Length: 403
Image (tube, rainbow, N blue to C red; front, side, top):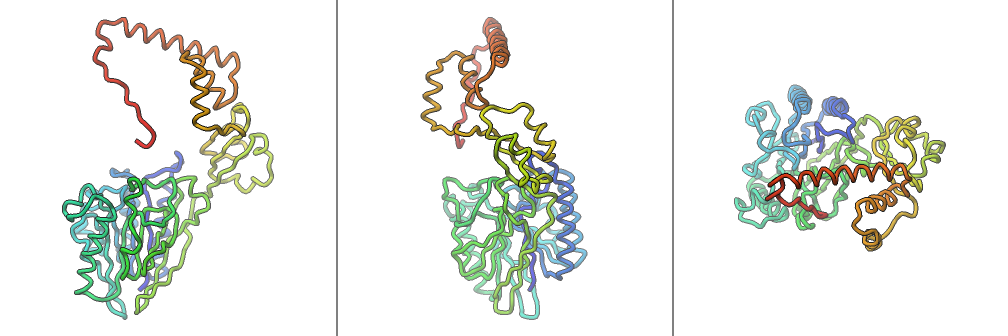
């Protein structure tokens, strides 16, 4: 049996404001061609088909086109929802799609009802496990409010089905399995680390096609081959170094698994570079990054003039600039001590802030800041002079780190 494992398309997502619609469409066209050329029996899509619960028209269009092309080519498709997908919207019309060989599973009901494929060696049971929010399903399952509890209950249902239906078996799911290496572009589905699930839950299966983590990887700890296909495109600079790919999976008569990594087409490479602006503009070793999407960290003591304009003369695809002056690393305690020493004068607080992030401000910059502060203070005094203008006004929300 030959399968094509992919996940985390995130259709409709951009890369730091760079539009990816065309690149995502190109990837799906390539995926269809690969599935047909390699004569796969099924394509497994392990969640996060869309980036938003309410996807754009373009995102829906390119997904629909790809699924229709696969169905027309006689390729079975198994799709599970991810934490970015709306289970209701993604699952709309799933009964009709099933008749065409496109099996979209988004609900708890039916997790123990596999899509069964058949080859010369007999049946292969494919168990699609959609992303299941513990807050929503834990009562129905009679378990605690954690992903581990929910997944454990689901795997018990699958085990019961398998007792009466022997044969090769795999699962398709969307979860964070303990030992996986995340990146910044995934929405964290854990709470304090308690919502990881153990790979050992999949013991007894032959292969587990996972989505959620954007780096392609195998996770140890199970008798099954547990693998993340990774996202086909990069969605964060934390994914520098990823080889974006899909996974071709072959399962023999005994359930032995062989994986082949097939790299996906990407619109352009991504890279991060760091240094003083003048050095970055002339360093010959950086020529390889001149066509890449870039995140640039400038280490100049003072914020340079027009850094983006100057950088883009050499690196036209700079998307992110950060300023980290060399030697500026200080502890939180030192930062607090500095703020306490400044006092409560808004102008002096502003001076201290500017000095910290961009170097000591000059007289012109401070004059502009002082004028703005005076204007704001004047508007505030005028507002307070209005009878009842602020009486009963709610206190502003204070958001702490991690809230």
